[in-house]
Amino acid sequence: MSLAFRAFFALTTEIKTSEGLVTNALHGFGAMLHSLIRSQQPVALAVAFDLPGGTFRDAMTEDYKGGRAATPVELEPQFDLIRNMCEVLHIPVLGVTNFEADDVLATLHHRRLYQPLHKLLLHL
Image (tube, rainbow, N blue to C red):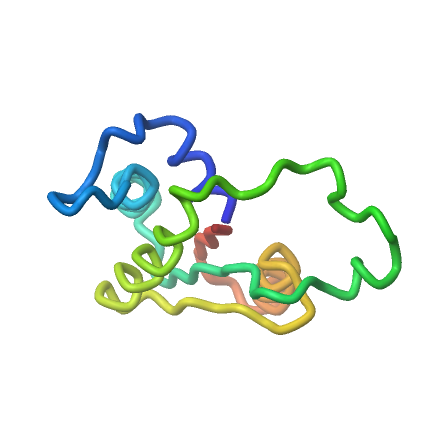
């Protein structure tokens, strides 16, 4: 979700649909994705999302990520829009119950260490 948050806070919430749905994170994510694909030219690409319900770290530490502010209300519906955009672009969207997106991407990276492949992984 980090790129989605980055895009959300980088662009004005005045970027909206005609119905008033804020789409600044979708727009920014799309622009960053396009730029990354052009500059890095990956042969494979995957996007990972945190799934609802927390992770094993929440069970280990009572205040895990306790200092973080709540996700902005205008950002929440944009996650599904970003997922849909990735699916339309045939970019796999990953998420594993009880694990953070970072864990999923780290696992993919670790598995690829033994099979050389230029890979770009995005954490949303």
